Amino acid sequence: GPKVLQIPSHQIIDMGQMVTLNCDPVSNHLYFYWYKQILGQQMEFLVNFYNGKVMEKSKLFKDQFSVERPDGSYFTLKIQPTALEDSAVYFCASSSGTVFSQNTLYFGAGTRLSVL
Amino acid sequence: GDSVTQTEGLVTLTEGLPVMLNCTYQTIYSNPFLFWYVQHLNESPRLLLKSFTDNKRTEHQGFHATLHKSSSSFHLQKSSAQLSDSALYYCALSNYAQGLTFGLGTRVSVFP
Image (cartoon, rainbow over all chains, first blue to last red):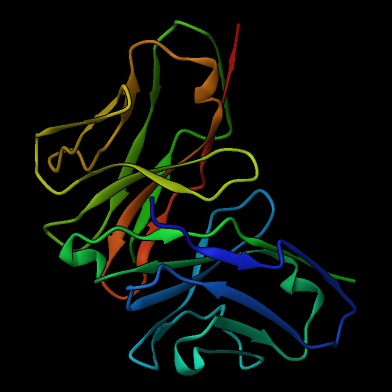
């Protein structure tokens, strides 16, 4: 089936550094999402992105977070600077339309971010 | 806001026995869409089942679920568990802005 690729699978960085998480969504998809999952907790919505713009973001999407997808390349999540509480698995997802239009979200395998 | 509650923690069972994972939800929308995603170790969460229709059974790969709006439920069932069913299962609710609202997830371990 359609695949979403996330690079890298694991990233270890020191607190205060910048990190960029990369997502290669399904090729014809238009809607992109980031979810955050802290160990032992549920996946929580961070942000969604459509037509070059952030459509919705949650309170977890702090000012230090940003997303972009320049010229149809990777959909990226940048955290600058990182904090200890940013340690989590970050899942990227994409869909061809909105969920309310009965479209399916396809997920990547996640990037495990460890902030030391 | 929207929320999803599912069977908590770890469910262990013997191969061949039935499995049922509970899922209930809360939402202001009168026509919610419900999903079950399954995630095997080191893999992506992938869609297992989805339903938009009240009281209609949906099936895939031996699993089935029925959306009951009257009880706000979407329980997942399988009549005979297999070793390969060992995975993490998420119940999720459509959310207009956020795509999906997830439950905590239920880990299923099937033993011979």
